[in-house]
Image 1 (tube, helix red, strand yellow):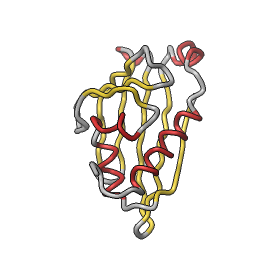
Image 2 (cartoon, helix red, strand yellow):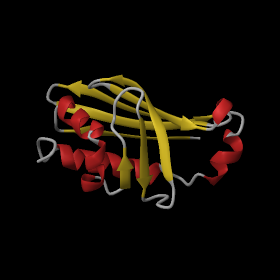
Image 3 (cartoon, helix red, strand yellow):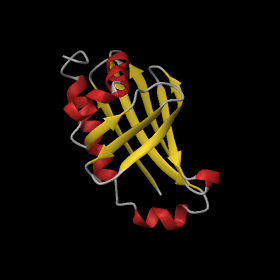
Image 4 (cartoon, helix red, strand yellow):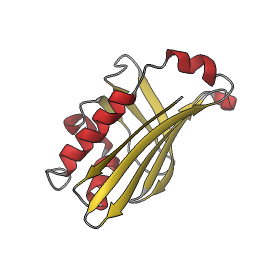
Length: 142
């Protein structure tokens, strides 16, 4: 199972990156997010509660950061039984940015667990649209 979304944003990658890495601000501009915990930095644990499953918080670890181009979060079960990997990517074209977000699942338990994961395609598209709308308003935190 795999989900992804891509959108062109009329804002520079540095601004989009600032929004992505300012986790506490997500609920103020992102209608897919109920609550966040933690600070986005390499090796840090963060948690996000989403509207698609508001009764459950998803803890993950920031496993890769290449500002302002790529960030990877991973979470799951011990011993590699189940793992979810979310990748955020930014590419630039002049003063604009292409934002891509994808999530994939792996591990021996993945076929069983992914049966209970709802279709997140619309949620991923909404996340991207919210990021675009916020970034195109101007500087982060304004």
